[in-house]
Length: 438
Ligand SMILES: *[C@@H]1O[C@H](CO)[C@@H](O)[C@H](O)[C@H]1NC(C)=O
Ligand SMILES: *[C@@H]1O[C@H](CO)[C@@H](O)[C@H](O)[C@H]1NC(C)=O
Image 1 (cartoon, rainbow, N blue to C red):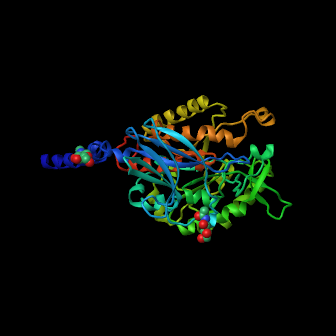
Image 2 (spheres, rainbow, N blue to C red; image 1 turned 180 degrees about the vertical axis):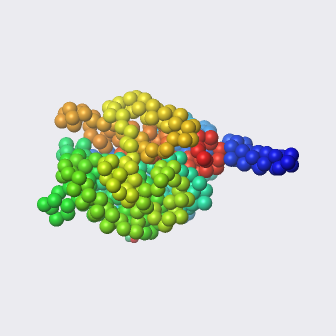
Image 3 (cartoon, rainbow, N blue to C red; image 1 turned 30 degrees about the vertical axis):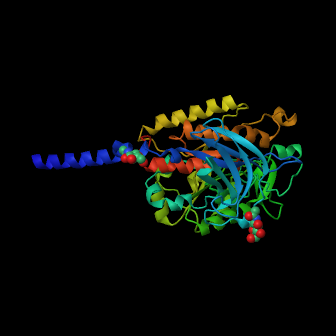
């Protein structure tokens, strides 16, 4: 009897220690100085007659010595075929530097399903020796590469980089002078396939329905239709077919042509037909489903749908992802908004009985009608330029433990993909307590 109790106690102790603080000491707080450094390349969404795709460099946690330089290379600096194109002397441990260098246009057809460096590299150099290098990289299989470890996490516990209004893209080779409408419509500068290959896993899709058009369904931004939904769907299927990634296709808002339930059913049927064999039926646990469970079904597309009657009538869609909008116009207000939702998420995570609800932190400013009419905020590109680096910083230093889906404008102007990958790695290392292993 006594022995049995002892035995269960020991098992309990083992499980407890193993799953709680056990791994903290060795692996979590002992990163090397080099590992701690974050350094990367971002691409500005701004464009003018003089400049498009300007390269920016961010760095942090660098222990700078007098005389250190940060250099930008075209080509791998450890090889012969490199060209030094920019350099500067950082004075602080962290910062952001614009370069005045325009990144080459990368057609989507140049991207592959293997992680690749896209020509540009940044190195921190002390006494002419390279201490650390990173490159502008794609992340087409960051989930699949971590399948064994990431599998234990629930959808609600993984940090998922996303794009806001994903189909409102315009992939431009050269400068285009934008009409006021474009300035407040275009939110992304990569098509859907490229967004996914860069590492995005949450797509925010607004659908317009045009029954008299040859293409009935479109990806819209508000009343403006941007790209046939078919193109978006084809890109998602192509990506899923070539990778082992899990993608959330969140159908949000129906700005044109959805006055009747019949219209919704027509869209639902279209999505079911087009994504046949790809989508995963809504499981009972919804957002508390683990990635492992998703992978085990062989279906890796989650279609969520922003209309309760459709969700209750069909298992092929998941409940809408609750988009957490601040509707704010300044950086300070955006911080306050995001801080509010992430703090609340942290608190809710401690109640393990809570049925996880899909949510997405919307990390951008929202113009008012008058802002648009008088172009008071300078357009979405400028607004993204002004917030994107801050979002990355906040999500790597303040809300890295609670972040779930984070959706941004012009994703290449942020480091949110690298930040999400890094913090998912830390979450699966078991060091951080905010997770719910129930
Ligand atoms: C921390 O890292 C250092 C150097 O990498 C190593 O010597 C040391 O044993 C590590 N400490 C722990 C507790 O793992
Ligand atoms: C894209 O691919 C083509 C053909 O392989 C190559 O010539 C070109 O340099 C590539 N462009 C970039 C920006 O990588």
